[in-house]
Picture 1: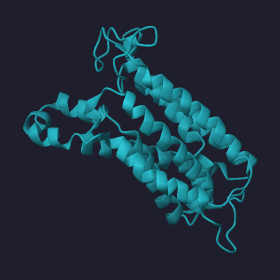
Picture 2: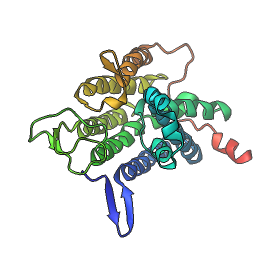
Picture 3: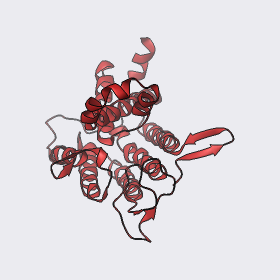
Picture 4: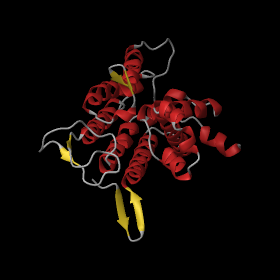
Length: 274
């Protein structure tokens, strides 16, 4: 659709712009929730920063894993060309890798600064589908993560996409996923509106998104995302994460375990002292 926005002599990538808008919106929501929960602003900003780094690194690593056979086969061609190296590291991200990377980054941060892991993670979790929704809008604008051939008026043909096949009506699976992520965002805001046992909010998100992603993968047509037997890489990950989400949602709170609540952790002060 619109892979680039032209502003004078500048060509701004629409996908990157949408990700930026989503990140700002997601951090903004987290700050509002933190203020209501008496959670330090400094902690929220640092957590968000580390989570976003984890998203980028994790999403890139999983993408590289999915294309590993091609990387090995064309290793010399890719790594002797600066243009090819630039394309390799500025394009291609897999969401599940980003989600795992963000959780690991927050685990490291909370462990290092002696913060409550669940308090921190579940403060940010409702923002995840919000950021993701804007990202999928960016995918649609750029033409990546495209859907199966589908008749108009539902099917939409790209005319200048550098990724999707142009001139063929395709199911707008990116917009469907964006819409479902927006709905999931509002659901999680409601679900997180009162104290929950540790892991419940994350569990609810994992279950909902695993189901959404597993189903929508059948409507995608970009085979470079990785296929193993009958399922895509993301479908296999969904099947692994679904029981984990169910366990997080259904587990009984341990004796003396505090629900995810509003108490500040003081980690922001720890950052300042270092």
